Length: 209
Image (tube, rainbow, N blue to C red):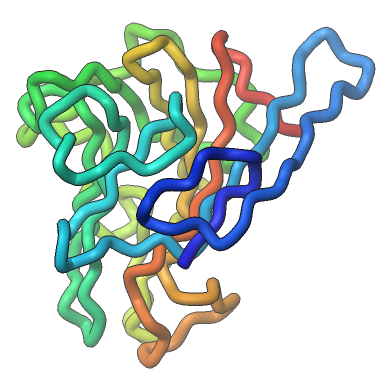
């Protein structure tokens, strides 16, 4: 079960509850954006081993629409017990899906510090040879592996920036991959529950504080 912290239409994937976290403008000419959060999202293996999310719609898209341009990011099912050695997160573009138009870049900056999106020329389509998000969990991508606890964790210093088919700029960060978001997950923690946050804008401003 999961929830999005804004008032949204909730899909059949089931959202626990919706609440509003309003942006605050602190006297600056730059708008302070709303941070939206999704917690505990997990693919339904009976339907699909992936979650498809649209930032324009602020909602999940049915797996039956995987060949359309309606979604922006695809999150894979993760296997526990040490069986997941890579996290194959895909943007909807390039040879992954020729109908998709989403482009992006992983920047080496924390979510809160990141104030603006890179220039459009730096945002790339996803394809099998030139991935936007590395599948590796060796610290070069968005996730790391802790051999001591045998857990997978987000790399807090890296943030995904993308641009949707409608021209919306988004900054995105996975906060946890485990059920109930334990502060310090262990090898017995249940893997495969995505909790993430994002903010979006119609221009390159991505300021959230």
